[in-house]
Image 1 (cartoon, rainbow, N blue to C red):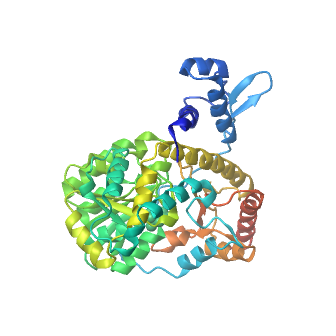
Image 2: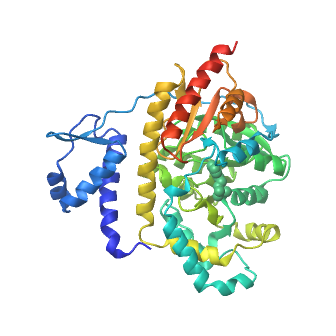
Image 3: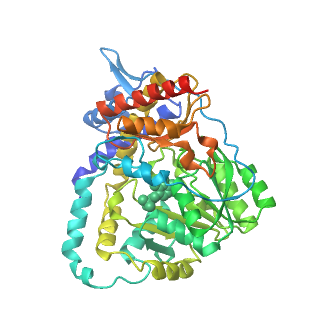
Length: 481
Ligand SMILES: Cc1ncc(COP(=O)(O)O)c(C=O)c1O
């Protein structure tokens, strides 16, 4: 557990985080000299060793560099490729039929014999594993009696309170009574969709979108209406407005922060506008906030639900990407809708294991939780910079690539008429896994695209494999018509 004795850890991370943000937003220019250790220590009223630790963190993240006898400077910007254009999906909704490709890709993505860029999850080594283990063993000792009792109701109260506090960090004022504990974010989304739709209804969502969403729509017999999405700023609200005006949209499913696979995050003003739009049209919005804590930008961590005035926004989340995917716990916060959702949840899968809920509540209320998110963001950001530089160097000329403000997913668009399903199979022969673009849509508009998940293992083998994917892509292009 993080004790108060370790609080200085938080301090150096806080200083590093503030400076990282200044660099990424351009407030501090690339190549610019940053304050000396002594000056910054004086400025913040902290010890010089705290600043040294902060600067080491920034050096590890390749955001700053020390020049002998000259001091510290903001590092040169990694090479940038242009980003893909806003997507242009068809204007009609379609019934969803997903191929078996996603499950094949996922089975390989988690196979230890493959270098994997297939999964969208941090490697176990990036989580605070000891902390998670200690919380689980504490809960096992204290609450073992609960294992032989049926869990009942919307979830453990201590966890629901912790989740309500977690939602407050996204600007949302919800009570523990508004929260339902589920088995995962995907279960949360499924329940929310079931609560507001019936088979044949139309659901609007980002384009490209997470294939897990398409699988849910297919299983519920819902039609997908893909909405044009900008690779940096997310859902086009003008296009969504048109869809709401002209089509029988029964629900909107969106990931406003670090959407999967584009990594786009909606600006604050757009979040507000989206909340107003769903209130005006009385259309429920299912907001997936799974990635919010991985976003570097405070404004973009704020949930659309924080602007909701009409009770239309249902928040869905879990801690699979930030604390521990193996706990298998998710949540819904939907004021005014909990009774119906709770009835559906108990008819589907009952309640979750109390012991694990207590362990998660314990983890969420520890003082180091915020520092943990910050540390994860820092490590992942450094890796993304490195991966982007490798891609710029090794992928075919004309490749486009996203530049998300956090997270570990990159979306690439190859130039020319290539099919990344073919690239996927070629890569598999070399024991490398990528996620082909076609998985992320109801049609094959994204067949020249691919998603690369860079949260997994990261070392020489992965760097070589990434360069190799670029080479294989170039070879495929050379043989394509
Ligand atoms: C946008 C999004 N939502 C939900 C999930 C699944 O979350 P969970 O593990 O809690 O079911 C994922 C997993 O990649 C995702 O990308």
